[in-house]
Image 1 (tube, rainbow, N blue to C red):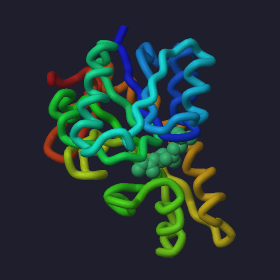
Image 2 (cartoon, helix red, strand yellow):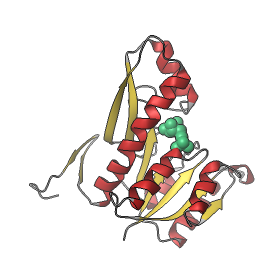
Image 3 (tube, protein in one colour):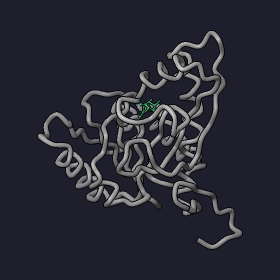
Length: 211
Ligand code: GAR
């Protein structure tokens, strides 16, 4: 059974979607540990309710990013994690983690990357920028994490239409629904080693080609 480590900073609805997919049998995996950089967030409660070990590693206790990431990596290795999933984790990672887990760190972003990503683009900031831009569509992106923020081969995307009455809040709700569908699906494809990476492009091996 493959072991997932989930990194969170907030409510954890994406964590819940992963838990639910495991519970209903659509995703064959085990969540080995949930790590939050913030104490007291609801994601930790969701994990505990399901008997998943949790840990708080508060970034404020570290002088430099590198040491914070090293502390996270230590825990992931202790829990023998195969795949790391960032699920509303609002810290930018040092390359120590992606070096230790090449093509094995996934992130979900609440917009259609490569638009509306990068430093400062997280949570409501993303939806505000999307609405302000006048674009008619937004969505969510699951991608492999690389040392540059929000730039990494895209595994899966889902789209939502933006209506004239949408606000950042209503858009966030619509996008979250899509996130909850595509994240477990993307995790499944990666764990089943069906993703073929070709530069920035990925495709899914549907059983007809060798990797
Ligand atoms: C989600 O919308 C996720 O895409 C976003 O934070 C929210 C967390 O929700 N992540 C980012 O903005 C990362 N750049 P959740 O805690 O309910 O899963």
